[in-house]
Image (cartoon, rainbow, N blue to C red):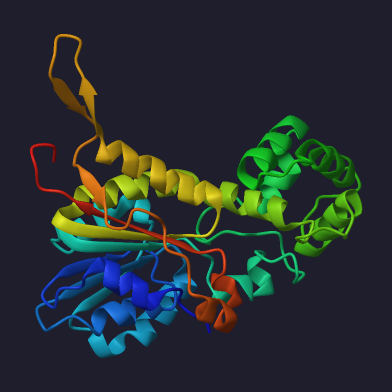
Length: 310
């Protein structure tokens, strides 16, 4: 079973109101959603969303107790406003986005997310989409592969890896996680601080699911859906995600620009927000010892402001 990360901190920063309207944009197996629902009264409502149909099935089962106050819907949080609109929801008191992989996805070899388990090179969160990791590995040019691995995996040896992949696929298509992981171990050597496949697998997963594009779109959708005083909490697990959250928040926080003729003008995207906590929160040492998968988590929260700027 998947263990939800930083549950106490998430519900604290979301400042759950018993009669509030909330969205969990990445419900997974329902751990965070359950914590939100436990704090809602009879007039409260939670819309729970996930791209993964297996997660949707697990969440529906886990949240049956709250069927009157909760709707579970398959979809991408990049389309948050449309999904909320289907239930007549025009504005909400809080949104949660947990950007981590669920244990259900990682631990199932057939999903192809893990380099530690041999399975098909898939990595799709939504199994209805066409593009898989195998498709990218076997069809992209050497230059495109190197660019993807370097930009999305932060892998210094991206060019060497891309060259090896192109050479290897001439012997036959790369179709399994095991074969790709073995190739990466041969190219980079096994004596590394992290597994030699870590960064390349991350890059493939992000590319297959367009995760950074979906995150940027989802953050904008969530901010515009918030009521004044409503909060958005985001759990990220690597620097690319956290950088995206920070950048979009800063655009909505805005700044005052001094004018040459005197006075000042506010510049920023609407609606305006403010940070709830100035720095991202890490998991406690106790949580990391209980759940090592939480160790890289960063929790940020922002609040929509009610002012002349949004």
